[in-house]
Length: 116
Length: 114
Image (cartoon, each protein chain N blue to C red):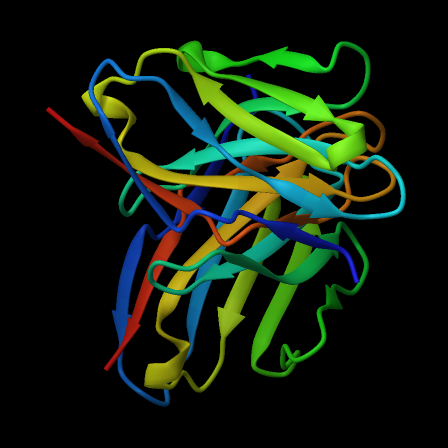
């Protein structure tokens, strides 16, 4: 199998605080992990691409100082939303690929972030 | 720019009836193509994928999709819909080498009436 987990599944934080979301590949080593954001009843928008041991590549319009991504190992990537604001409330989904080539992305179950 | 279009925002189908969800992409070459399903508050589940070869792809839960190069389409079909199929369906493409980021369509919400 290829299972990706996310923790927490749901988090509420106060405006101005930071929150960290973990994405783990449980039974495989992920060469690349992706972070997506999904607003209610909308599609997924890619935020950044993360490779183990290197800096993440952010999509245009995504603030890298606000959304800190760390890919410390081949099984773990973290997304930290710094100084969160209510407009950061969203559903954050990560995905991972095993290796380059003809492979698919394996998605985590998502993390619902609510900033009050 | 590359894009994925799902023309139907919301579709309602009677239980037992057939279903077709449309997906068109805009890209110079043939991308890798995917259909995902998302239930409320849940992550994405892969229904099927097309990389190459046979243009009619079979997936899970009785779904299939057909890649038509001439129409730049990858429509999803199911011959008989079940109430449990009610969900959000996303078509996605992966450009170039697999392992790169996906571009998603806006999704189609499927409702199933009894």
